[in-house]
Image 1 (cartoon, rainbow, N blue to C red):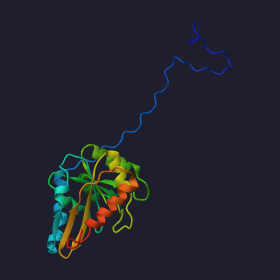
Image 2 (cartoon, rainbow, N blue to C red):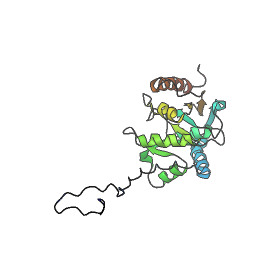
Image 3 (cartoon, helix red, strand yellow):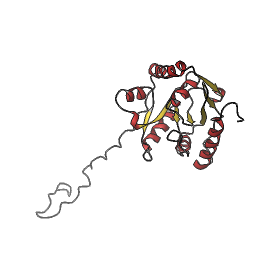
Image 4 (spheres, rainbow, N blue to C red):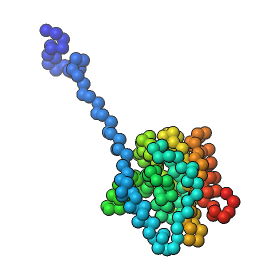
Amino acid sequence: MSDAARPEPTGSVPLRDSTRPTAAAKPAPAEPAPPQVDPRVYRAVVALTYLPVMFSGAHLEVHGREHVPPPGTPLVIAANHRANIDPFMVARALPPGRFVQFMAKKELFVPVIGWIISTGGSFPVDRSGNDLGAVRMAVRILKKGGTVGIFPQGTRGGPALQGGVALIAAKARAPILPAGICREGRRWIVRFGAPIEAQGGIKQVTAELGERLRELAQPVGERV
């Protein structure tokens, strides 16, 4: 009788059978798939959110659209944040074919509104801490050639830029497109600047981005 088949002596501690297959390790949970943009919902939301602007007698003016890379290439759009309408202004200012998926605060993802936001391609972020899940989601979107929109101030009029934009761009090897938003009378103005490469360290890239956003958010009539 072989050692493997021989029963253990009574009262002894059973030995592990090296020939017996061990339980397979549980596979790591699958990463959630990036949200898909439904072009019909996306365009409808952009059109509807522009109606109050038109009814107020205002209009959107876009500068620097030539700085926007062609669709199908990864791009991080970083803009200053001054009003709730900012994401829709940036989306409307982009050339046709470039759909921006915003990193939006998780509190917005409630019934109905959350469905609209998700169907338009945006995804939640927990601003109370370092949301690594949101960072990974942004990187996955970029690696598929998508566009991620971020307001690095975190909140409207926030005093300091967060380093998440530079981190995400570096991980996905995507350029950062700075976008300055301002309002002059009846003009809403979105001004795109030349893309910034995420090279040279998070602090350095964040500082450069902050300087460019301050310049781009100035009124058009002032020196840039």
